[in-house]
Length: 78
Image 1 (cartoon, rainbow, N blue to C red):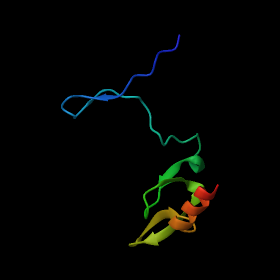
Image 2: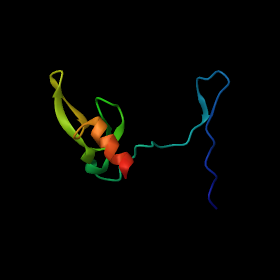
Image 3: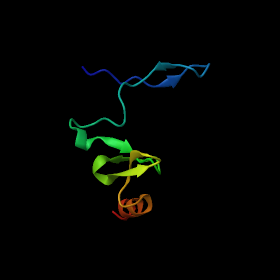
């Protein structure tokens, strides 16, 4: 028999969870290329295939390719 998943609730103090569902919503599917990363400019999580590396403030960061606005317009059009 399968157990029912625990319901996540916050204690009355608001500091700790009584029970919390394990895991992360950003789980990789097994290989590095399928993992998600957040865009340095807009902060949205995207698959690595939709990001490009760009030198900002002296460091290499990942940003949406070709740009955040164009990628969002492309994804909403689908």
